[in-house]
Length: 502
Picture 1 (cartoon, helix red, strand yellow):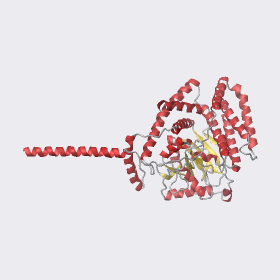
Picture 2: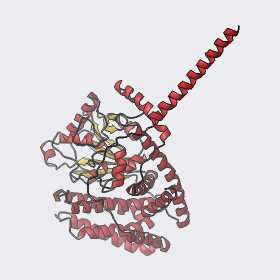
Picture 3: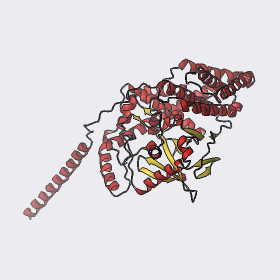
Picture 4: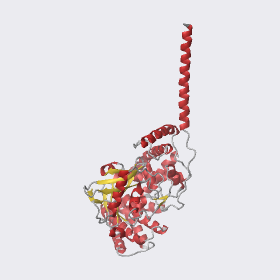
């Protein structure tokens, strides 16, 4: 009996040692999997300089004018508004039928009038429809003139940005301040004719070959939109195909999680989008004059390719290598196959903070085709834009936060991550790799590393924490002043919040 007891005790010791060894092995494996990557590729920006407005005094002056107009009442400023709108219509007449050099002083007058009118219309929103029409018409006039400009020239690029982005920014400030009035959800642009198959969506006729430019709701969407030398409002490109027999629309787009996919219009609209703009190739484009169905043929090519083969997402943003494709490349590759080069105004990213942060997400090409710059391409016309006021406010808040975070990145702030999440992320990545081999989607996107996945999660969490406090401070601003903080004030609020826990 004593021998049996000794054996049982020995078994217990063996079991305990085995369990302890197992625990130690798991802990060691966890620690090994938590070791960060040692070989971080060096990334270099485009080497340009970013556009800077550098007009803080003017922004403050515009806000002061807005407060004064609100206090005095619309009766006291109506004559100024009528004068400004009349001046804008004169500018339109001067743009029509003329070929102007981008250095012409008329453009300075247009910019000054649009910005000067904005605060007055924001205080008296019954003039919003006229102001919106003026901004849209001036944009179309400038884009028409830019067809003869060298859009690669820095002075031309600055001029287009100041007028097109500046006009958009002025109008959206007015819309947000007048959000309780009848701010339009749809802004109609140029009714550019097209001979390709079409369908109607929300009062707008859309054609096969149209390009849908949108802004997502994730912090990385704000990073893509704002993170270039000319910060913009868009982060995603999708390509519209309309079947010539059934009239059914399909969307071809590149998703980080899936690569290039075909979506229904309902699926496309289901994803969070803070804004959507429709762009169309000009009907008088030399190649379309020869064959007006080129946009449809390009869309069908993209549709057929996405249906026949798996095209992975291109995190490097290399538009010269089509075996993998990011969102812009879906449209540019298809159109290039028919001789039309989109993105004649190429995107550059030079800020060290932008380069470091986007480099962490796998970007290796900082001279590329970013969504935000496509609206400046003179080959394209703006057909329509959809904006929801709540979404537009979210867009501005997210932009302000990302701008402040990128400013911190320029000063050396890295994208961090919670180290203890790296080991499970690597296990999930291994599982995802197996799923990808089976033709299925895993929890970590194909082409994305585990480190990138946890950094993306960290950015989402950091942005969410900051946004909560920025929204609270913005509400306090509104309670005190009686109006929402304009964008420049929103950036200051975001800066104060960010600095409080940096």
